[in-house]
Length: 204
Image (cartoon, rainbow, N blue to C red; front, top):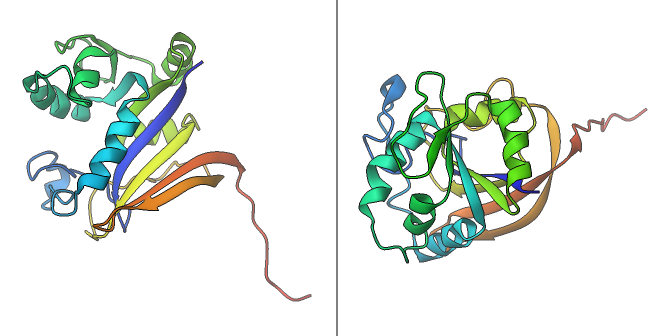
């Protein structure tokens, strides 16, 4: 049975909106798109390649699907470790407004909560979520993520869509592995570790 993994580019203040380009996602008049580019380095590229190598399928939100489908089919080298996966493997799109998708091997997932359980039964390794800020809120609210892969960049933005929004299930996480690239991007891999634990430093 597959696991659902989530890979997210993140600022120090928790923003995940439009990491790749200025016009990627300007909703909410977001003016800071493309904040990943100045800090991206070879080490980060290796991390992403390693992650994509584990994929059996992808689950994408509608906005991320539109961004990816406008770019990656133009990268036609089947040996490209990212394009080769995205262009060939099954892609499931969570959308409330569209049910047909033209990118090769892409199909609609109308019910995310029930659909994730079915997808995990269908594959052996990973169903991967990349980007997809709105979809992630549904996954977090329903406690559906098996592994969190957070790439945190040394920038702050002060506004934009955040990874852990209202509705996130309070819970504990266990740090599996961490590393830092030469340009200061911190990779942190977490797995769920049960319900939220609290305590007190009060002196009786």
